[in-house]
Length: 329
Image (tube, rainbow, N blue to C red; front, side, top):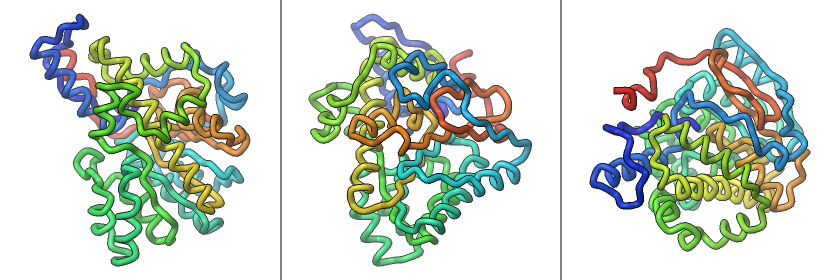
């Protein structure tokens, strides 16, 4: 889980009656969660849910590409080929090398198969029509596309994702949003099932889900927020994470149904894991495990276990402040 945590003054108590500080903390945590999932360096839990995932998500480590500089990782990525129609490329959101490497990979794939649709976690699925209209009216205009997508430049630290979006635009491939609107996610956290979109609720209810998978998400969310998440918020945050994963899976399925030969998801590592994330919902919808490739992008030092991915690529960590520093004061 991958976005820098919000700044809390103190950890809020977990009792059910919220104090003003608890409500402030909850609001801040929820606001941060709209951007993604936790701190840039938060660990990916070794999966207690591996037995519920596909055979590819076993306890064995997937193939690793370990590099010492950004040039090497980008070059390695660009030469990897896949026949899988559903490809999920993870990221640590604040690592620019990950974005450049995946942009090189995308250019290569888009040249091989122009009938590719690229789905972005960073864009809501509700913006697809506006994006298509903007690209038709102002082809090649990056600012027009970002405006149509309502891309949060500050939240996603633009221009980190610029190489990826430009790679899609220059190829002429379709670009779609995969996430939910922030207000919708907030409602899911507060109201649960009543706030889920009908298409996603149906997909979720068809998806096998074990207690071990629930616990993995709870642990990831808590670790991604430096242990500062009030316990009372965790059930709602797990619901929100599952809703986002289901939304991205549904966006990929829709693109495939519309004729795409390959669909590529650009998202945080927490969303591309086979054991608890988007692939779980793809398989529940009938996609064969062999038709999915989940690629984790980690760092060369201090990165966690890579269980849950078919392949991982590593790059040096950028210079960053301790994302949990605010919680240690």
